[in-house]
Figure 1 (cartoon, rainbow, N blue to C red):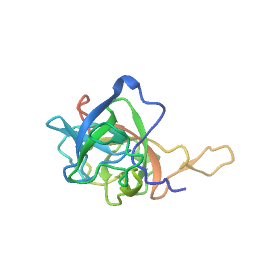
Figure 2 (figure 1 turned 120 degrees about the vertical axis):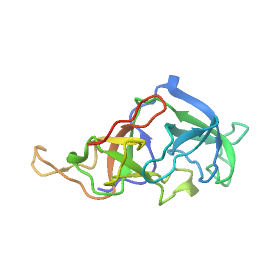
Figure 3 (figure 1 turned 90 degrees about the vertical axis):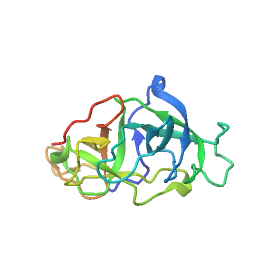
Figure 4 (figure 1 turned 135 degrees about the vertical axis):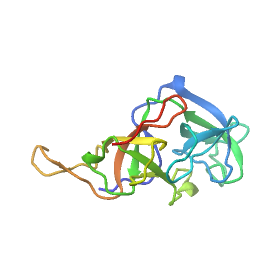
Length: 190
């Protein structure tokens, strides 16, 4: 079963002590709910795709607002457009885990591997992120996330009681944790 591309979805309820409203400057890429963000000079911006982002991760967007802090409910654009500014509630907890789509085939042997962010299929017209992750051979220590488990709905079980778990296919969901966060030093993947 393929996971839908909705960005980073918190596993469980985020700790409200680690949710903060910050100003967003969508420098080169729009910012939508579910996007991973970095901070540049105190402003949030969407994390870049590809390997070795060279910027510490800051958090994941839970909601976006106008510059006045009002919801985008009645706006035509439900995200902060590229080149625009606004506000966002961001979960900056380094221990928060997220469910996200992995565009490449991933299985239990990939648990612990660092993954790159994939931004190739933006879904921002709905106000929901199009970010996913990509398991690449050239993943560096500086990747923002690492796989800590397969998605709960994407395991392929072969025995009646689930004794054997096979590798899943492309676009399966995975559970990820921060690897390169401003409050956590990065580590090498497996």
